[in-house]
Length: 239
Length: 220
Image (cartoon, rainbow over all chains, first blue to last red):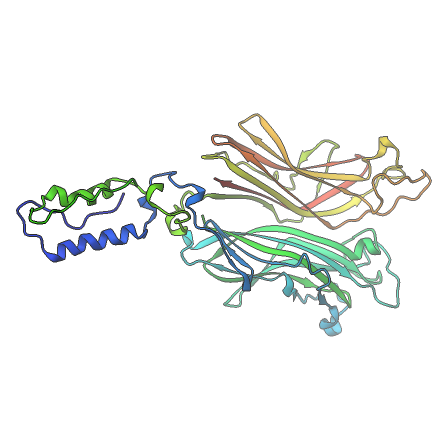
């Protein structure tokens, strides 16, 4: 145990006020529970000892001793949508290759990695559940097969310096349109089975200290579609 | 730490060094325990980051290779290498073991008439594929922590269709997900956690694309 007595009393020596103050100050710091890891013997803590969680309601954060959860959940808000559209691509609207990844703010979660995180980074696990729906163009009937337009969702992370990166291993789709796409991704069944899609995935990331934004982005290929984020939350494991 | 006695200092009596040193020496020799701490006193700064309470293990396949579900019995997914975690971890205390998996199903082929099932009991599994998360612990013990099944097409599993009815097109390029938890005991050794898949009829084909398996051990 690293509590070290600053001054050792010795018989016959005159005790100075400084020495006595040093001892009392050290003891005060210690008994006021400014205790560090090394003060504890191994496996001496139980759940009762751990500080209770803090719920930070304005930003939907829960701060546990062992981890943090940053979340957006709208399970009881079933008609709140983010809309997206390929019309933002202008003259490239029907291109199979031109990309315009748009943010879906309802899925966005800000994560703050503590500068005290071990090794300067923390492991986070992002979980997202959403329901996507692609409207067909009004004048044509939806077909089936590879001709449907594939609207591509990906996880994107950004930091305050403006860097962006997307994770190919999180790709998901919702399909719609008139069956004339040049895309090769084949949803097979068309109609409602292609344009209604549940999207769910988890991805572990290692983030360095600082502020990060994690959200779904979409490269739209239909005129009108929407997504209803049922839940989006990030668990940050510190301890 | 236990209760630390504070020897009385009596007026008119010169205290000895032993008397003055006593409370400090007792503290220096002791450790923090329950008798003189409040509940919930320990924060993040008090815990050893080298041996965290939560252990997170993951296996991610982010590529584009498709893995075909080979059998009606559960087989571990392996696009390039097996989607499995081998933590070889011995629990220090009782633990809540949490697992989850997600991924993308690619192309699906229904292998002909009635291969999506005609509604009779013998064909009730034809229009399905399924996933499970299997844990192996203490070398030989196993448990299925999470499971879930999906239909190949929009047809319900037990809906009666005459044999002459057209097979409906399958729903491809869709996501899957499952999660669950199990409580294990102090001293148990977690050897392996696997994401597995099975198909209701081998006349059909289901390809699995990117997939992700997570294991979180929360010790008490």
